[in-house]
Length: 257
Image (cartoon, rainbow, N blue to C red; front, top):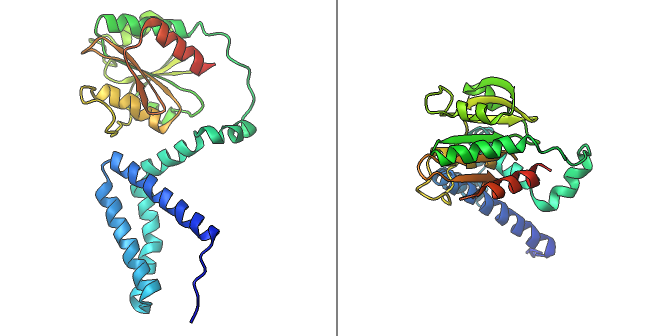
């Protein structure tokens, strides 16, 4: 009779698997795909019982084939959740030294004059209760968003231009503006919407879109609410609300340095 040995390595192995399953459970819950996640989990348990415990060869071989093909299906089905998982893993503070090792070193951006027109435009639009969504690109490119429904502008950042684009009579006021390389790269862009349950119910689609793009990239989203006349900023999926002129300037200057 064989004796099952259980050591520290096995305990760490079980802990890591449990941690990964729990993390994916949280992602599925936020994206409202929890039923699919539970179904996959039940299928895996049945597969392990048939193949490992009861050793049913015929049924086990059939399930093995389904699992090998199903992995590709799961990747396609949950590509946004997997992308978010990998991004959060890479954005973790403990991984930052490794990122710096492979990154090209750049000096701090001292010239922040391009930030002031953005801050001024956002505060002016909020005062007039004009809805706006401005995305500032950082390390991760956002070219795919421009290709969806955006209009390429490629213009110098100007407060009046920003306000005119988001004017209610403008055809581009409903979409998002993308700031890239200190220029207004595009406007009227369609963004992914966050399904996070932490976003207050009074926040509309504009705020959810701002949080959504920061969940999938390292971009900064500035939202001007036409209902409340308040300015908010989303960074790494977290929303900072009711910002003043000085608050917004400080956040952008610090984050873009």
